Image: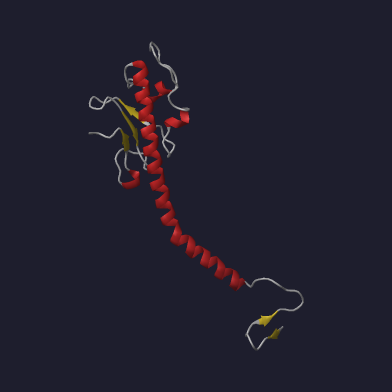
Length: 150
């Protein structure tokens, strides 16, 4: 190989085009640094997006429960739960559902079933346990409810 004295780079002969191992390692290191910087930010945005999606879903389910009440004259019982939005409970008159699209609509963005709680103050509450899938939590892992307690 001959040296090009103007640029200090080696000139390849005989059709040996390509990248050196050093060049490849530098590119991989740069990609790794970019990924390390962006990953926490993207994960945080994904968590916040799921919380927003869950809140919208809970509001939608809350509206469906209200439509059930408007048709039937009462809220679903604790035993009937949110399944009463999909299939007509026994001994119920006026049911004109389904009030939810499908069974998947009864799961939160984390894939867990949305809970239905009969509540004496608000008549009912729909609850998602949030990102940690456990009662309690903070931030994007907090429990979400609709309607909110007064």
